[in-house]
Length: 251
Ligand SMILES: [Zn+2]
Image 1 (tube, protein in one colour):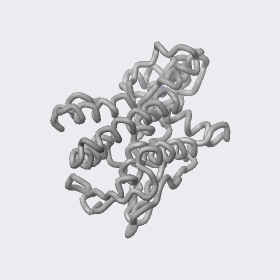
Image 2 (image 1 turned 90 degrees about the vertical axis):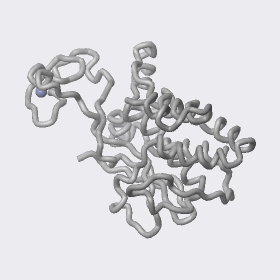
Image 3 (image 1 turned 180 degrees about the vertical axis):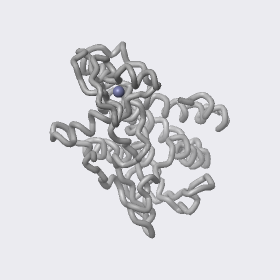
Image 4 (image 1 turned 90 degrees about the horizontal axis):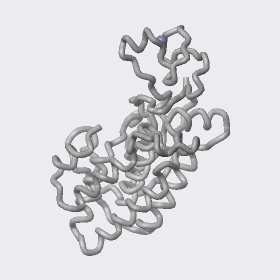
């Protein structure tokens, strides 16, 4: 069992946002975990074979089209005050849904808020792209003490405070039907930090840039990760419909 991580990022107006490794939908690990082709245990759960393959998936698992999964799924979770963490373990809205809530807020007073959102997204990219380890590495560093996911929380807080300063009282409602529909009058700062952590989680769960940067081989990175989340915002910001934006950033 991976060591759980559930850390408060922001609590305001009856809502709490946490950064957690218990999202429960582990993504494929796109990094080359066995770059040196050592003899290692096959990375597919339940398989006892060894292999020298770079993705650590043995021949018989490859035949079954198995892919190596990350050990954990990092998410930003929102908890309303009348619920517990365990009830909201996987309340981690997609970055596109969170963006939509902020885009609607922005479009109410575009002449003032577009520049806020642009600067916010820009700041997020500067702080996230290539700077957050892949999900498995982030977990490994956490368990060995050589890294701390708290740094992701700190980064998200700092970026949000720069663009949505403390004391800001704007509130928004959730846009979509479904399990989040009871989220009403959410402080905009809560939505902003949820987006910041969603971007960081995307980078960790799907990205490989940090991995290759560490090996001075940035050019080998294949996954745009947090860029995809930002692309969704840009499409909506410059007039694409919600459907067009969703189609454009499909994984
Ligand atoms: Zn295997």
